[in-house]
Image 1 (tube, rainbow, N blue to C red):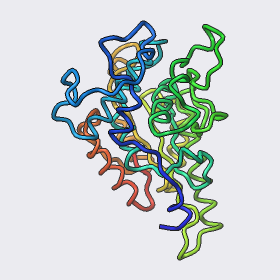
Image 2 (tube, rainbow, N blue to C red; image 1 turned 135 degrees about the horizontal axis):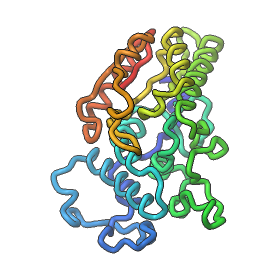
Image 3 (cartoon, rainbow, N blue to C red; image 1 turned 180 degrees about the vertical axis):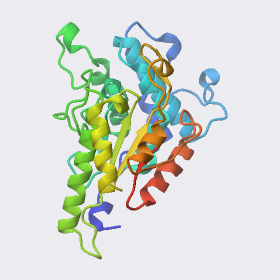
Length: 297
């Protein structure tokens, strides 16, 4: 691994860090959810931690934090909670990033195309050590319009905030942005990498929901990415089969897998994307090893 990578201290996402940061006294939550503090539970506090491995603890702790944020001021908690195992897989095992140096030039880029789930990104940034994402900021999530409070945790991510790579909100836009970022990384690698020195190694990881993949801007970008064979772009699809208005089957019956393959993408499927962090990690590692293909998980 080149020295410029070794010098970077990756974000911490171990069990001890998670437990110390997430409110645990859930039987005493106030109306604002997050106001009960950051107490450390005993090993079997309320029994929910029994017989779980470290990944399970991380997923449940992240979900508890997301529950509390939603309880505090609303928001799209369902999608964020459903993607928790994906978040743990990416931020604990896969992505290269440095919370103490958010602008590190060769960091991996994470793009939340389904930007309405912004609390997902904010919670991950908080848990992995981005100094600007504090518990106080999470408490102010989405509050600016209703109370006049100043916060970095807006209802949709904004690029001006360290730890946010792309402003997203309009569905599908983040997919197109991700393709652009992957093209830029390929261009830099072609200009500056040497046979024995990979100066540019960054990858782009994009999460989407079903709404993103219905948008024209996303489909055009997906087609271009397949044509260019951008193997430094990995897209994860939160296939939960539900929309905010009811079952996905009410409005869409197409095969996403077939559509992606038709555009030149390699498709990998994980049977249990809700809890099986290691299965997601294996799929992502396999996707990273592919050459000349992009990958949908």
